[in-house]
Amino acid sequence: MTPPETPLVRVLQADGTFAASEAADRYVPLIEAIGDAELEQFYRDMVVIRAIDTQATNLQRQGQLALWPPSRGQEAAQVGSAHAARAQDTIFPSYREHVVTRIRGVDPLDIIKLMRGVSHGGWDPTDPKNGNTRLYTLVLGSQTLHAAGYAMGLVFDGRTATGDPERDEAVVVYYGDGASSQGDVHEAMVFAASYQAPTVFFLQNNHWAISVPVSTQSRVPLVERSAGYGIPSVRVDGNDVLASYAASRVALDEARAGHGPRAIEAVTYRLGAHTTSDDPTKYRGSDEEQHWALRDPIVRMRAFLEGRGASASFFADADAEAADAAEDLRTRTLELGPPTADSMFAHVYSEPHPLMDQQRAWLAQYEASFDENTAQAGGAA
Image (spheres, helix red, strand yellow):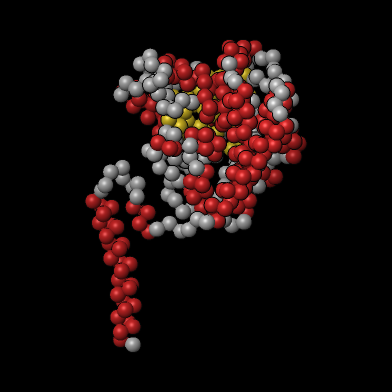
């Protein structure tokens, strides 16, 4: 017998009007407390990152990047959850959380450097300006183990569940429906549940693990996988930024308070390709894409804001900001030069290491030998 499907938390309908969702009732007071400035910032973040995303895709097509993983269609899930986190929380992204990293303070150019192949990691996760944001992880699901282990450390170090919301810490880890079938994800949930580690597992179900649909990956809603480990789990409309924000805010507050891990399945859709090396027309039809295009998260939020009286000048300003951000990214990408040879020795170890010093000295001597040989050859001539 097929179990009843987990209710979907939805605040906004596709047309931007409020949804009558019983599953969303617990979040209504939290949503009503969001001010106009923050609501407008949600929209700005979505519009700006889509412009950046489009520019980065174009740069890859023009040979400036080796690869680019588009996030088009998933902006609401990411923006809502990112704004729900506190400054002291630690973020473990996968590899398409472009707007999450930007909200936390990471320069989008640092993602470009990684995808261009001129950086080994992209940014320094220990630099305060990067907002406790860990590096992108291209190995599917491994970041969930990193997050669970870090959250366990928070428990051991007494940095969570102290009763002080300004100090207590939690962890958010992002992964996709394809990664949810990886063993690493399930092992991470076992440890997080066993140690009651303050981990929020944020699953972006965009319906396709490259070319494999969710219906093949799982016979039950993906949210039930985390629930099976005893982790309180909620399923939200991932194209509804308010639902994403509210569910993430509650989950993080509960995790920080010592109630253990939480899990969120954000049901969204990848409007573009899995990466720029992928051709989605080979495995899905235009009818499905058109169905989800009508549920575009940016269009939905714009309609909601217009209904609240947002001015035409606000939307024009947001579009201008997005265009400027995309053009700035393009300009700075084209200005990037090759990395120095010395950069390969940086960040291999967390502290200075004699082996790196030896290898750096050897490379310098080796490169200098070419200059000596050239000089000798010139003298002989």
